[in-house]
Length: 143
Image (cartoon, rainbow, N blue to C red; front, side, top):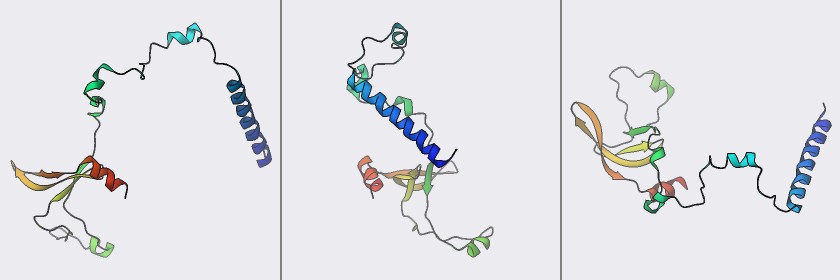
């Protein structure tokens, strides 16, 4: 099949779709659906009617179990491949973050809070000191 044949087939498909659309717009709305289609009508919930729990706000319980990646970032740096290959056990890499400066807490790469390092039961953790508002997060996305 050549490109001309492909173009002809595509034109025929589009032509048929456009004529079908014109016919459906010209004919009045169809009467009630056949009984076979009515059987499946009760399967789906009517989304146009207000839900009983909508007065308290949107129901977000269905997303509460979705896993996300939480990252605490101490700082960043840029080094050459040569410097990277020279790293060994005990090497120190200087980061752009200052000692005592709040660390960034990211969820799926998006900054949501800042905090400070704490040690609890010989494990490191982070105490949140500042949480980013949703408006600030949206503003950062629009940059």
